[in-house]
Image (cartoon, rainbow, N blue to C red; front, side, top):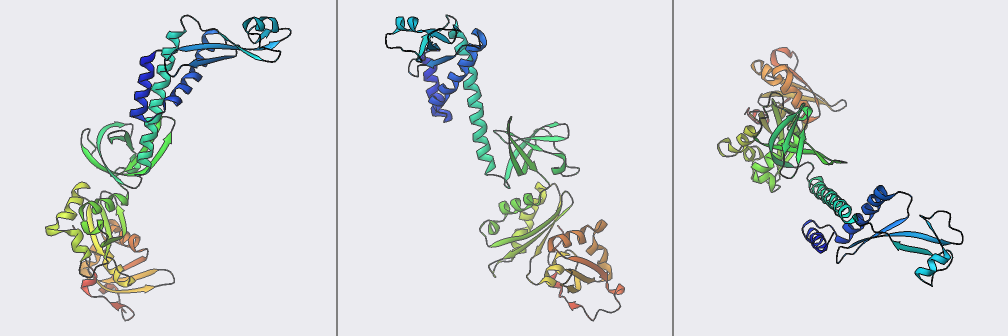
Length: 362
């Protein structure tokens, strides 16, 4: 090693934020291991790297004893006195034993240490960056398939889109741009591992935050999301400003806002419903796009009975029960749906005006 190497360490310190002293300390430890590997493990040695010139020297440490038993670790008092009269029994003497060809070994070892420390530092920086971005939306590019996982290039690192987080039947073609939701950032021996999702309800939430300024500004609040990825999502919204229609704000002029979200989700249907503190009204709204006639609730078991017109029954239930299932999930109530002709006695039910079933099928 030489002065140029020390200057290189100083440059690394500026660019990567890794202390030169920390690097030299790591190099010292690595050089001791390299020396013992090449010249014997029984020696008690110390390696000194001059942090100004880059010169490397190896010293063998020996204890001053009256009768040396191991020439690698012991030195007689008489021999020690020849080095310096100051040495006494029990002192440690350092004798330079730098091999002639040790410079080449030192340079190679130091390079390996520096490269490893730079890699570790960069991994740490990337981890620190992405651990603060859990539950956030990021843009990426599909790189390749690895078994059943899709690898997504996020710029400085690749993320993993596992099978459970992939939308059924969605194509992930290499080179295509995609928005993903960071669900977990792990620290592993190989560096940070970032797990992303296309199925998480948080993805829909973040997409609406991007498209709807009123949500970003806190005027419109997302009160709940239920989702069956690739098929349908229900999102309940509320406005803190009585002059702002939360559903209209999310739909946008001519439906451009919600359509942008639908396009990103490759055509997934989205029902935007108005949240209400009135449970009956909220349940009625949750069954959008069906129009609800009557609702009754049982607080004891959080169940609700809902009546719809005969021709609306299949719409209220949805294909394979999907609409009812999502409504139950977003409200947290068990919902039993009946048509008017199925209900013989509806006197116990409360009338619900049609405007309480807001939201249209997108």
